[in-house]
Amino acid sequence: MGKKRVAKRSKVKPFIKVINYNHMMPTRYGLDLESLKSVVTLDSFKEPSQREESKKAIKKLFEERYNSGKNKWFFSKLRF
Image (cartoon, rainbow, N blue to C red; front, side):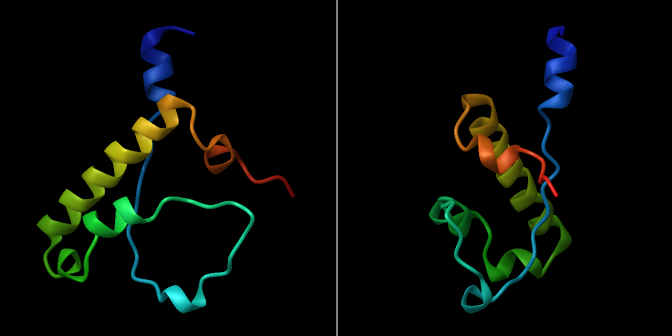
């Protein structure tokens, strides 16, 4: 594949959502949430512009992680 096609396929479309950490189920996979907690706060949900900024920051973090090859399981499709 060409560089253009690889760049297109390695894009990530993030979304943010408010959740309660008590309702999260632990799995055998651990994801570093500390860096994401600093980017997304309750204040980022008040205005759409702040929400867009946090989405851009998350997108940058996830794309860097994807391109570096860390956490391949996180970016693979679920098999049912």
